[in-house]
Length: 77
Ligand SMILES: [Zn+2]
Image (cartoon, rainbow, N blue to C red; front, side, top):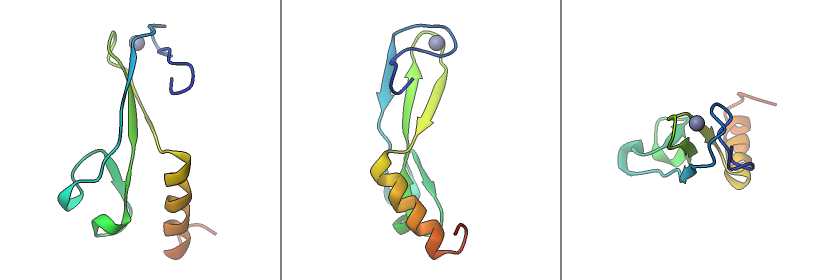
């Protein structure tokens, strides 16, 4: 849906992107790996406004940071 801009469930082309964000105390659309917002990473959502299906994506740049954080914590090699 991110690239096609078309809903994978109903075929609608009314797909909108809600960008991820990291607010105070980890609020907002993000994933938190550690205990603080220093290790919280924004996750964007693509939502079909016709059927309500939603997909979540982490940007390429953020993905690199997530990988580094996971390596630092020994969660991946
Ligand atoms: Zn849909």
